[in-house]
Image (cartoon, rainbow, N blue to C red):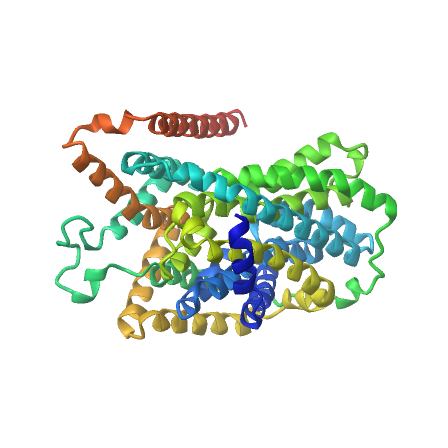
Length: 498
């Protein structure tokens, strides 16, 4: 580790990296502050632009968006009682009531400080735990990696929404899309229909612009929303936080940061689960339970520190085994691989200087988020009231510019439009889009390791239970599926009782 720190700092401390870092933080906070514009949408829109960058500035830009998005969602949650991102819903429970008491700026400050602490804590955990997990991952063979991918596919059940069946169908669509192009073992064409451009497969960024970005515009076009009037005088209060409130924030912030890291490491959970679980724990442990739901500083601190503590933790399984912790970091895998950075121990040995630069850079991303939040809070607040008729055409232009910029051809723009139509039809059928993304990301890796393992064993399936690691991942997969089935049965039983 120590031998990489010096070169990593040399790579990191450049004007280019810090500019992209700050730009990512600003864009992420602005996007997340607008209700309906998610962090995953923002990352997808700007992913194609990172294809022209080297690894470090590209990842700094995307991580800036990712981390600031965790804080940005709290702005609209506090100001207008509408979470900018799903995981800011827990912040809304106490953030808006505190704002109604005339302490809007204090609520925004608490959310910012807790988010920054959770983010820095998570980045430190990544820095120290990532290389250790990578050493374990280095001992995995093709059979073990297939079992890891199989375990990763259980994420799909966790992000399937109300219907697990629809989630599985959506994941199968993603797996089918991942098969388009040359067979990874024989190089024969698959599902290319005589179109030469499809031989190399479909670029993830192009597909995702249609699946997540353009479809959001179509969905917004179907809704009629009146102009939102925001009173900027609401954040003119002094924003003072008392010493007693700071003391009360310490315990829930530290505990929620730990919870956020533990939840983030487990694939398929995410910031929403971490923030609600932390909010519930903070309420149970508080000496001022009666304040929760009425403007509790502990509630805001717990929710915000947890959802930002997830950010660094989700990168641990991604960088070490190629298994994304959630949908947003699944997209970042594309940015890594375009620069030849394949997940595993090699990232921490042969390219350790780059990896440590990215991990240390994540700490600075959160520090810059703290600085920008302190000075630009009023600007982020005004973004909430941007009219949709101005915002929508800007996003559409970014969508088409991003699709064209990947390979500089109009075929990709056509593919984006096709995927937008597919995503719109799937939305009408109430099918979640995230399982499609995970199927596309994990499909090729799962198939390649499965077929290689069978080739090594001459077709004997016993290779998948031939090591301790295989048995461990089989057990984890069974437990994960059992837990998800149990939770779904509880939900259905609860609905029946109602």
